[in-house]
Image (tube, rainbow, N blue to C red; front, side):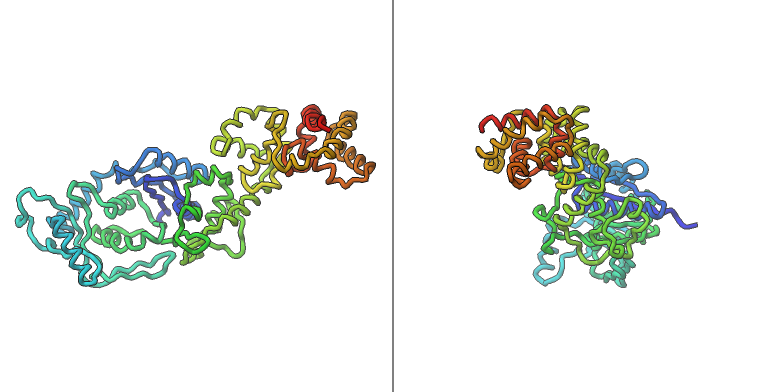
Length: 475
């Protein structure tokens, strides 16, 4: 029986969950879920100076918001330092590692000599075959791995294909520092082994680490997990991803009003393809995902494509679900916190009634909320510059004539309002827009809005007529 697939996502809590990390987590999650396996979460918090509780919270919250659940308890690498030291001592006792007493000055001199000779800096192995008895009493030391001096280390990478390193170019690297703390290289191997990880899926910036890590596995006689190194994300211009391209935290995308399902769909298409299919449900992603169709070239992040995809998801989401998503997102959206206290049952009903028109014009929840601001506005409305320009004396005169007709209507709905306005336009020989635009400016304070007759219905008779009278009085 084949082993259960176990992947892991292992971020360092030195900042937010950035978009590249989110995609790595997504790929691990999809790979594990498709195989009926597990995805584990390990927080690599060994850098104590830079690791923060706030960053850990941001990572956990970001993963949960994206809908990426993990199996079992979260593992914290720092808590396992004693186990890492134990393995280093095990290698030392087996003669597969050694104590190195080289001083910082000696290491600096090695680097300078290599630089002068045009060679990459590497440790020269001076303590590889020497006895600790030769070291000064009480001298500090590190523990280094005895790496192979000849031959090759070969990785059959699930994404990159066959990758080969010449062993003589890989020096004896440090496993345990002089203060007894493990290096990243050792800690990762021990944790992956102890957690039963079968597949390591990570960014190709870790590919250079793979050879050294494989050598640790070999020295310990542990089975090496399958590895897949996925290309990094670049900006739309092909340059390394930076903040101007979108190298932001997942929390920033939440604050910009993106739906988690849309961001998840966008991320899965960054570097992975499944024919010409662009849109995937959660289940379709799980069913279709594989590493064979992950490209070897960097994916390009494109905000326009993300916005368009998010707009598609907004329009496809049922109105009541989109309303729930908007309300849940208010604490993260600009001006959302102060509005959250105003969304009582009547306001929710208005938002739900306005949703069909609102979501057709919005690509993000921020735009959706902005479009809905007329529902929260208090009389007299503050008009923007374009609305002021529309509401000249002639336009206000039309409003003054429309108000009594609307007041007299026995029904208050979009169809009844449209019939009244159309009849007035015909009688005055005006185009419908010449009447509708002043109505829009008076009702929402802007030149754009959902369908104006829908706006009249959603606002209701009393509020609509009050706003129109406010602007009609100046005629």
